[in-house]
Image (cartoon, rainbow, N blue to C red; front, side, top):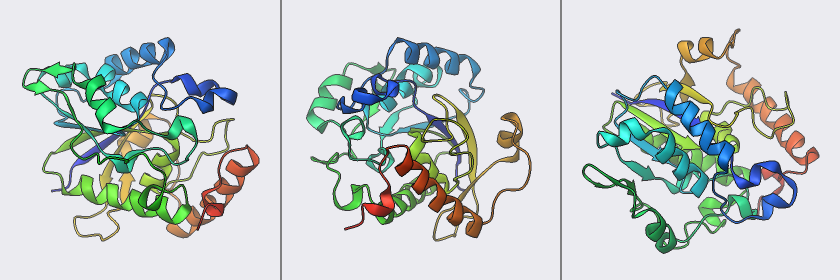
Length: 253
């Protein structure tokens, strides 16, 4: 049976104030971000039932995983870095760190059964935004599908997925709420939502937010159809461009 997914956006990092801060390479969390992690840890209701944490390999996501999910880590739950979950753009703040450096930085994080962070899925140059990891619309759609398929194939029953507001829209194929604030994403820092897979044999490995998750965050009404989501996607791409963010539709080729 496919696992339940708890998607969590990373806490506030050095880059979140915008402007020149976007030029910081692979930023870490700031004090307010660490405070957000503590609040998330206190409020997250599924520490006892999750059996895997999967994170974007960007440092702000890895640190969010380590800080916010200490109760699960204390009982031996691992953090697996999945390169497919990295953020969408190729600007500095969304560009990762070489595996050897991450290994040195996170090797000190030890749990009851050894190192907490598993970097084995990262290949040298995983952070280079070309090919599979290019910031183009087609590449982003494809790797979001790859990430969903990988997650669906896991044997665990409940998985926390720590990642990024922009890429989570691709992962969930849900573009509602973008543009309701000044942010590029409808996801707030350390916001979490719960999803289930539509079916065990769907080639696209589509996921859908649970009714409880929608109710908990005050969302009402029906979920937009796939055609409606495609139209929303086009509007969001223009919104991103108008706000000075990369428009993946114009990054093809």
